[in-house]
Length: 163
Image (tube, rainbow, N blue to C red; front, side, top):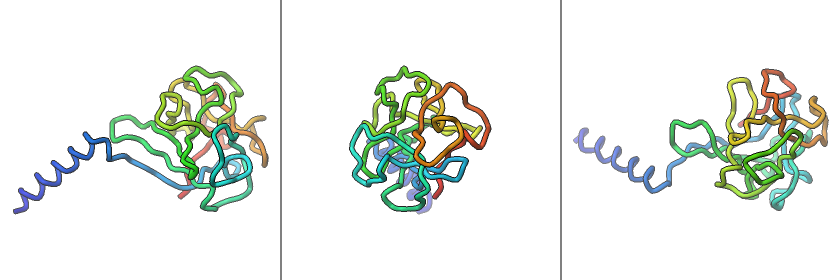
């Protein structure tokens, strides 16, 4: 009986993965090394595409939640989705981007919506290799979050999901 259940469970997992229905997800609040929260400008749960991502002192409000969704694979990359259903993307809405490009809400499931959390504590745009920075580099309330070519282990450059 145990062997039969094991085979059935394994078959179910394989079926779900092949059907694209199984993903790894971590949800919570995006935080910056300064202790500030990250959210769409205006802090609305229904923020529209194109809304800039900024630092704020508002913490732990359901309308500010994000989920890091990644498919079940050897890859450690995925979309960062806001409760609005929109994902974080460079404002250029392209794979190639440049320093000081703002991060905004945009489409999910496209090549330029892919991010990875690095071992240094950065959030890195997969296709460009650029990392999140608060504009100005230090993290002040209202600062926009932008991409920059430095990925380093420094509090001022660290971002994470706080559950």
